[in-house]
Image (cartoon, rainbow, N blue to C red):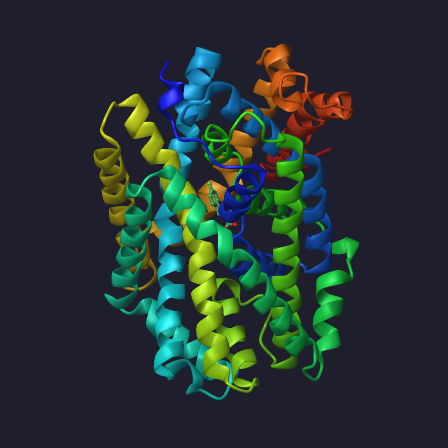
Length: 451
Ligand code: PFF
């Protein structure tokens, strides 16, 4: 095993930062508000928080333990720890490729919005309807969004090709706190808009009658997506952690940060949504239609909007890097390609899917998979099926199959740390996570309907 040749990440801070860099991204700022808006607001938030705490956190820890114990890409990790569970690694690589297929499209939108902020184009409209139709016209354009998608893929490729340590660490370190700060300012501005209280009520007051099997599935999918779990990303990243990294603290910090950013995004979006009469159920366009209105109401609007979208591009980049790394590390270590060739293989694959997904919003919209265009189908397939399935198998693997000593060693750094929550964690991974995940799946298939 050539583990000594693999890069490791610096200190404790770096592990938290790169893992948070992966988890904080479009999932928090674009996906969370629109999915919460479509699924009942407060009731969604409640179920989401429970999913993060009871399913997300334990599975994140489980993936950290697997990754650092094996010191390999996600397929290699399961192959060495228990060959029969290799499929879980493959599930991760395939999921990463499919997520990138649509994630790069939205990444491209944020890049275009950065450019539009700079040129002043984004400040030109006056009403929410005008922003909605401008957004619509842009994403349906046959070539511009596809070009931005490819640009984003190449940007990610550049950083990946630079090497794990330098590329990932540098980009994550400085700019995340800045994004947080800008979000706080925007939240304050949004809360000062007339009628904003309605938005807060929507986000925080749960209406239990709105919780359905679908709410549970979507909230669970969102939790997995947002934390980057259920698909080997955190296994891959943890394989670069050094032996002193405290996995429990890292997992806790990442979960708290990730949830805070999603909440903040909700506090930015919903007051403004209600204040300007936009439907909270507007779907993927929600953030792109709401935010320009908030920027327009600020002095120096162009500075705010350029700053925000630039930071969003960077937060997105730290997520696309982590997705790309799942596949690149796999091609590099399992297929024995050079790192450069491995990165190009990933880039060409996701570039192709990305272009098709981008076109599927416009000219290829008639091309349907189970009633959805390619973009929506990739999103639904990964977040609602593949990631929860990956999470289910991960909890079963670590709960039942992984050697308990290996698990303990990872969580205590070979006996150096105390491990007081051990029995709770094992209970969650053995019983609660698999049962809840299974129940939610079956419920959505309608299995409990007749009962
Ligand atoms: N967690 C990222 C986000 O919330 O934007 C998306 C993501 C990144 C999902 C990496 C999965 C992954 F492996």
